[in-house]
Image (cartoon, protein in one colour):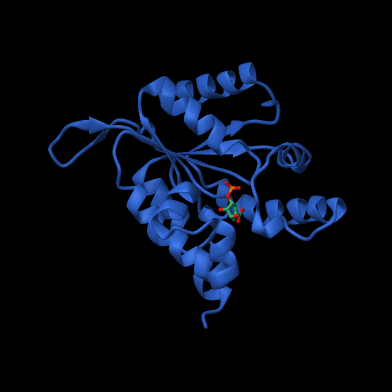
Length: 209
Ligand code: S3P
């Protein structure tokens, strides 16, 4: 049985990765051809999947949702994996699958809210891609989660007050990891289609793509 502390990176490590002066988006493949790889991170309910799909569509790239990829490869829902293997088992699978999808070229990838916070995943994502943190307040995240239909194992069996408290506390802990992203997009106002389009436009401007 592994302990969670073994798989969480040292959260005392406070050095930010150096922000590159030029966008990383146009990377060179092994044959010298250039490609784009963008990874969206952020808390549950930040809109990673919604923005990711629109961004991929606008750029003519393929969209991957890491939870979807895990579900497809494992033939199990995220909840089933949590139930069968616990959160530790899920995090190991998530880590391994991240290393598969983050090799793909010309993609936008949205990862799970916890992905950046385990192992060296955040550092790895920053090496592999242009990472963008979709940042929102606990209140906005809670409102988005209320509207969404997905099953989130970490939020099950909690009263609304407990969910709000959980979001506040977990977001405060996770901020250290999220803020290591190369770019940050404020999505506090993103609650209808034109605002999603604005977020996509902001990200394209930030990344120069
Ligand atoms: C999790 C977020 C979920 C999913 C899992 C754990 C988290 O993804 O990976 O339930 O730890 O924040 P979304 O952020 O897409 O909901």
